[in-house]
Amino acid sequence: MELYLNFVKNYPLISSFIQFAILGFLGEVISHSLRRRLKSIGNPFQIFLKILAWGILGIIIKMGFIGSKGSLKALIENNLFFKIKEGSFFYALSLSVLTNTFFGPQMMLFHRIEENLIMGKKDFKGIEFSLISLLWFWIPAHTFTFLLPKDYQIGIAAVWSIVLGIILSIKK
Picture 1 (spheres, rainbow, N blue to C red):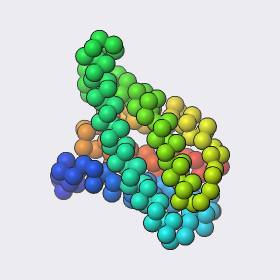
Picture 2: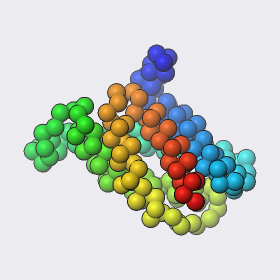
Picture 3: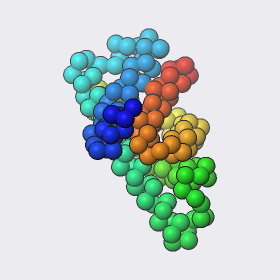
Picture 4: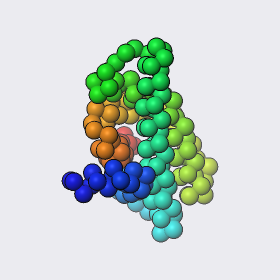
């Protein structure tokens, strides 16, 4: 565990890329396999591009988390938000709501565009459900995530991708 934490601390963007490349894509594979649609995941080159896209998404999410934390801090310092203690449940909930309302929709749209480019299609079917998942899944999930120490947050966020993949495959 110490090796992992040192890697995350010393190489935050590279570690974010790797964690999401592996875990995000694994969530996609699990989702497809549970729906018995593994062939629809793509050819070997598309699979490589999807892994790359998940890694890039990991970097974007890392930066989004940092930006959201800075935004919440600025809102509190400028008396535009309640004074809440960093590390508290209400801080984590506030940060999650902020992240998932201002950053989440754009990130989801970017991810869908990546998928469409890789697969050579123009498909935005289900994007409404994805956006609604910000409310019922991502806000609670990231509330828990933001209660964890900083160095664990990206890793658990990538694990949530697997969990959501399983939930979505069951839904379908």
